[in-house]
Length: 175
Image 1 (spheres, rainbow, N blue to C red):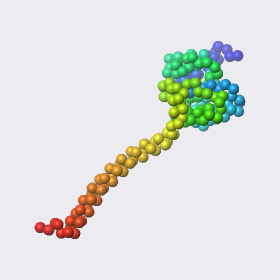
Image 2 (spheres, one colour):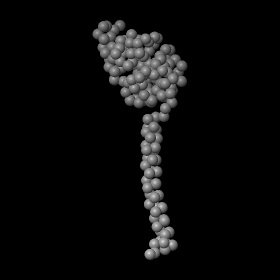
Image 3 (tube, rainbow, N blue to C red):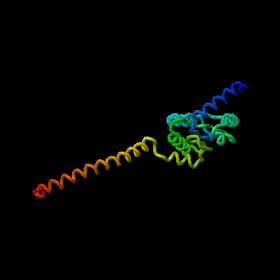
Image 4 (tube, rainbow, N blue to C red):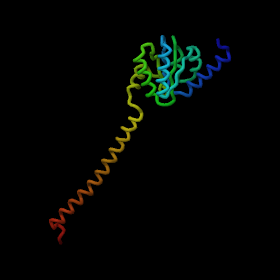
């Protein structure tokens, strides 16, 4: 059993984790086997996240004064946290995929970029395309407008050259 100093250290460590990570998913892991837990932790690591099991009362105390206080204030049952300071979409995808394969793993709540979200929003987040694909689409849209502008400018000059050439062939410039 942990003594008071170890519990205080755990509380401070959890406070630091909550304050440093704006993307947090509160989950329940009841009846997971050791191998299922290992696969879950592996999937979360591959998505760039971290995972830890927490005691409900310590999580509530650690979240006081943070945006996560409404998520962690009234927890019940076995609770774990999956968190990242990087891409929340990748972590949400990994967790959603894992929860579909393992019914014992469920979502309780989530926080994305410091805002509380419900379970439906977590599923919507998991359905989003990866960040790289969104960037590629955005760059394509920016480039498409620039390409159209250059084509239009070139078209005016080309059309003027064709008209002048035609007029020159028909001797329209004689005095």
